Image 1 (cartoon, protein in one colour):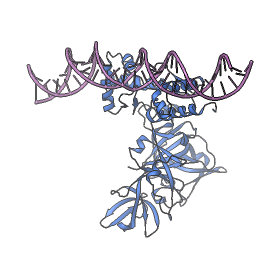
Image 2: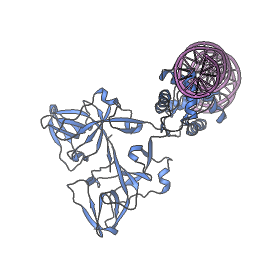
Image 3: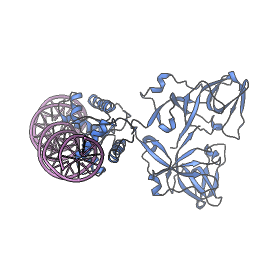
Image 4: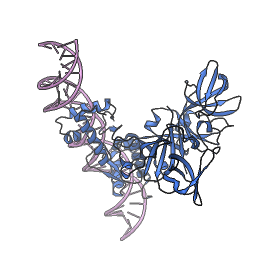
Length: 213
Length: 213
DNA sequence: TAGACTTGCGAACATAGGTTCGGTATCGGC
DNA sequence: GCCGATACCGAACCTATGTTCGCAAGTCTA
C-alpha cells in the first residue's frame, strides 16, 4: 500500500471522499483543482498509474468513469438489517429464516454501521411491543438487534422463550448446573431460575435502538 | 411508491442497476438506449419527474450527476455524530460548541442513517455513565443522541440540568404554568415538579443506542 | 370545444470533460 | 556526457453529455 506517491495517495483519497459525498466519481478537472495540480494531463497520468496498480478501474471515454477497486472500502459502509417482526410478552419470538436475512423487498430495515455489525452475519431486528422488557431497560417501541443463535455463553444477553411460562424475555444468560439463571439487566430486579430445557434460546442481543418522536 | 409511470420505473431501475454494476451513474443517452426512448429530452423530462418525487437528486451540468435517494437503497448515506462527552448524575452535561459538531478529528463518532437523522442538524451524542437515568430506561454505557436546543415543547424528551439539585436528567418535558413537570419515561416512577428557572434545557433527546458486548 | 396539462419526439446547442501531443526537469546507469 | 524512465506542465482537440426549444398527440376539465 506504500507504493503510492504522495500525489497518487492524495488523488486516490480525494476520489474516495468525493464518491462518499456525491455518490458519483469526480471529473478529471475536479481532481485537478482539489489536488492542486496544474494540468489535466497530470491527473490522467496518475490515474493511469493508479489503474496499473489496481487501485481503480477506468472506463475510457466515459465521463467520471472511475471505479474504486480497493482500499477506500467504498461499498456500503452500512449493513442493512431487516425488522422481521415484534417481540412481546405473551407471543412467540419470530424466528428468522435464511430468506429473511436478505429479503430487501418491502421489509423495513434498520442500518448498522460496519462497526456495530462487527462482522456478524445472520442479524435481524425485532420491534418491542409493550413494557414487558422493562427489566432490561427496554421499552415499548424500541428495536432490538439480534444475532441468530441457538446456544449461548455465560453472560450473553439473549432472547429466550420460556416454554412453561409461555413468555418471551431478554435476559443475561448463566448456566448453573442443570438449571439456568436469567439475570435482568436492571440490577434492582430479581433473577429467574429455571430448568435448562424450559429455555429456548432464540438469539443473542447485539444492541438496541430507540427513536424518540 | 406506485406513483411512477412504467417508463419512470424502468428508468429508475435501470439507473439503480447501472450503478450497481459500474459504481457510477449512467449518462442520459445510456438511459435513452437502455430504455428504448427516442429522445434525450424525454429522459430529461422523466428524470425531472423522478427528482421532483424525491427518487433521485441531480446535479445540473454535471455528467452522470445522478444520485439515488431511495428505493434502490444504494449507498444510503450515513451522518456522523460526534460523541462529545459523558452524561452522569452529579456532573454538568457537556455543552456542544459549533466546532464540536463537525470535529471529525479523532473524536469518536456514531453514525446515524439519513432516516434516523431526519434532516436534523446540530446533533451530538453523549455516553451515559452510571445508572442515574434508569428511570428513562437508560443504563450505564448507553449512548444518547441529542439535538442541540435551548427550548422545548410539551412532551419533548429533553436533557436538563437541575441547577438547585446539581443534577443531570433525561425526562419528558411539560410546562405547567410557572412550574415544570419532568416525567420519567418509566411509568412506575414519579414525576419531578420544579420551578421553570431551575431547569436548564441542554438539548432534545433524539434516540438511544445500546451496544451489547 | 377550447384550454391546460402531461408525455413524447427530434434537432440543435453549449460545454463539461477525456485524450493527446510537444516540451521541460530530475535522476540513475552505462 | 548521453540516454531512457519518471514526473510534470500547458495547450489544443474533440466527443460525450446535459440542456433547450419548437412541435404534436393524447387526456382531463371547465
